[in-house]
Amino acid sequence: MSVHRRPCTRFRAHQRISIRSGPLACVASSAALVALAVLVGLPAVGASGSAAAPPRVRTPEQDARLLRRTYFSRGRDAEVRAAGYAAIRRVTGLEDLLATATVLADEADDVRAVLLERLEDAQRPGLIVLAWLAISDDDPSLRGAAAMRLPTSPDPTVAWAIREALRHGTPMEIDRAAELAAWLGATDLMPALVDHLAIVRVRRLSPNGGIGLAQVLGTRSADLGPGTLPTPILARTGTILSAGPGRRPLHRWLEPRPAVHRSLLVLARLAHGPEAPDHGYDAAAWRRWIAEVTPMGPPRP
Image 1 (cartoon, rainbow, N blue to C red):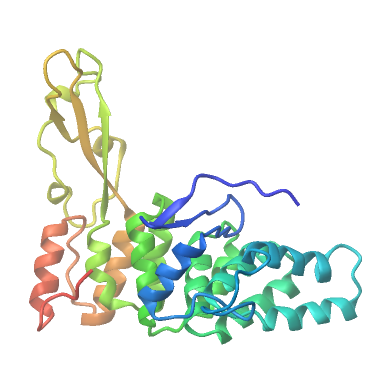
Image 2 (image 1 turned 90 degrees about the vertical axis):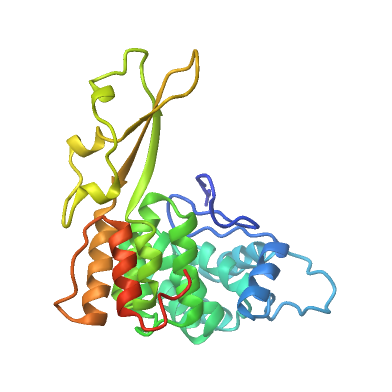
C-alpha cells in the first residue's frame, strides 16, 4: 500500500508528527518521542525494548507494517486475523502505539475496533494517540470512534494534546480540536480557545491598493461584535500596513473561526449556566470575563 503524505503538522517545535491526507501518519523520531515521554511522564518505548536495551532492529513503523503484512494481508483467514488481534493487544509504549495507529488506521472495521480498544486500555499513552486520531484523521467515523473512547473529564494528557493541536495544527485541526474540547466538557481549555477565535491573515496589495482596501482601516477582532459570523465583507476589512519605500503595502486582517466560537460558548455555558454571556469574537472581552468568573484567575494556557 502506498502512503501519500502531506507536509507535517508541528504539534511541537522539537516533535515532528506527519499527518497524511488519510489516516493519522505519525512518523516521529526516537528523540522526539523521548522528549514527549519525558514531558508527560511516560515510557518512550514499549514491549520491543527498554531505555537500557540495545537499539532495536526495526523502527516502530516497520514493526507495525510487519504486523499488518503478517496478519491482515488480503486472503488471511479468521484464525490468522485473530492472532493479529492478539498482537495488537500486546503493543505498548507511546512510540509503538503511535506507529501502530498510523499503519492500521485505514484497515477494516474489525481491526480498527481492536486498535481503538487497545489505545483505550493503554491509558495515558493511548489517550494521546486517541486525541490525535480524533483531531487529525480525515475519516469522520474514525474521528468519532476515537473521541467516544476519551474520558469526558479530560485527563491532563488529553488536554495537553488538544492545546498542542490548537497551537500548531492546520485551520481544520484547530476547529476539530476546539470541537473536541467542547465534546469532552474541557472547561479549563476556554483560555486556549479564546486565543484562536480568529486567525491573522496577511497579503500584499496591488500598487493602487486594490478593491478599495485603502479606505478600510482599523478593524479589530473586538469590532466584529457578539455572534458575528464571517462574511465576504469582513474578509475585505482589516488594517493597511506600510511596507516601506518601494514596496507594496500589506493588508492584515482577522478571519473569525465560527467553530471555535461555538465551542467556547458551549464550554462557557456548561461551566456557568445559560446566563453566560456571548462575547462573540472579542478575545479581550472573553479574557476579562474568564478572569472575573475564575476565583484564582484563568488557568495557564
